[in-house]
Image (cartoon, rainbow, N blue to C red; front, side, top):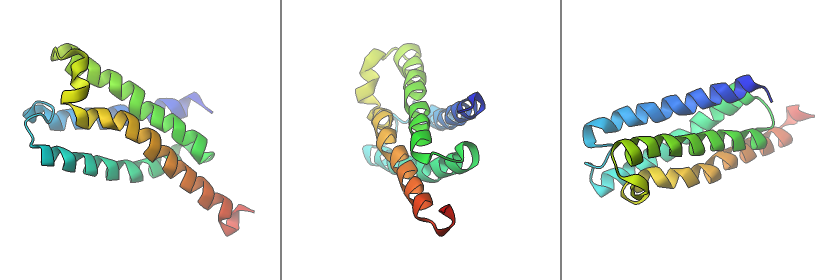
Length: 134
């Protein structure tokens, strides 16, 4: 695997996180939203991750979709958790307690480890069963 793929994937996940951060600034990083609005935000994010994963796998990684999806899940969770901790935990002074108050962030540190590899697995299976794969 080339370093370029990792760098591009890292940049994409950072940009997505940064856009999410900017969108949340007027509402104290979505804390000003009602619980139901936060749930809808999670639903939106879940469904946004699906096509974004497919695009990254098809355009950047191009093969070994399941294995590659694990790298995408890593970049969509570990660095993002670090960014959130720096912003909410350190800069806003919540420490590790933000994992509860900002549950809508925290759940995605885990969801992406299910959702993204599932997309990779499905794509890998479709490739293996396609008539052009032989």
